[in-house]
Amino acid sequence: MSVEEEKGLLARADEFLQAFKKGAEFTQELLRENERLRFRTLQLEADQKGEGVAAALAVENRKLAARVEELEREIEEIIGQIRQIEAENNDFAARYVEIEEENNNLANLYIASYQLHSTLDFSEVLQIITEIIINLIGAEEFAVMLVDEKTGSLDAVAAEGISLEELPRVRLGEGVIGTAAGTGENYFAEGPETYERDLLRPMVCIPLKIKEHVIGVIAIYKLLIQKKSFASVDYELFTLLAGHAATAIFSSRIYSDSERKLSTMQGFINLLTT
Image (cartoon, rainbow, N blue to C red; front, side, top):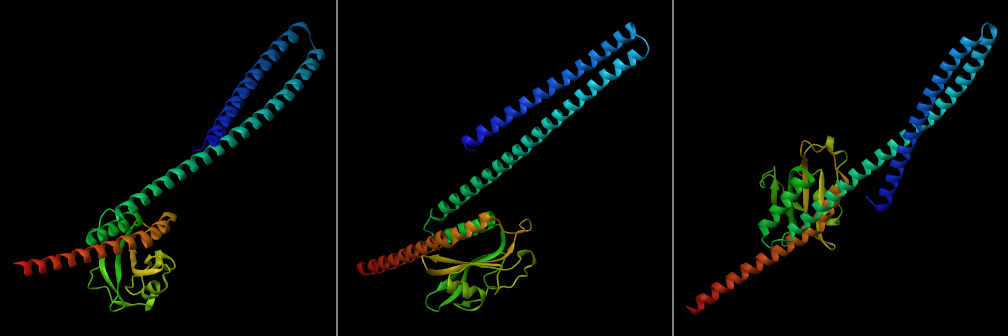
């Protein structure tokens, strides 16, 4: 919460206290008026008889009634001010909760980004991506598919809730998955709550891109039972996965290929020198 918002909240709290004190003072004044009238009535009854007493009582009653009406109007104004302050306090509380949620989401995004670049092991990178999709996005069934540069097709390299053998090989430009990989555009099915699983037509398809070069996609087929729809942070996670996950996968594959080539060369050199 900003300093200005804190100052505003303190000012409104002070207004509330002042209004409350004023209401208490009005109540005390009303009680004093009642007591004064009762005392005056007793005096009139003791000192005077007949119509003079009735007339005096009527005058006093009218004065008291007018004063009561005035006090009631002022009390209504105070109640209105209190309700306004309460509404503003509720707005501040709701905003505070919203800010806390945004901070938590930013922390999750930072952790996810850090984890993606914490290793160069290809299998570990895929495992981290899987955990992000399960824990932060809330997906139950999904697949990570990468482009085979030789065949120009998309093959599943990791999956959750679905066996790799079930997942089809998809050519670039073919169907929802191939189109998303070919264009680099995210795909979201209409109404995730009514979606029926189709391995060729996922609920969500996120291209994994390095700049404009697509190296694969993440295809989501089912959300966890407690996940009814996507929140704004989910779309930020999709953006993160589109770039950071792609970079992490690409780097780990290059590293793995380099390690494999180095190991092969070392073995060949050892063979020649023995």
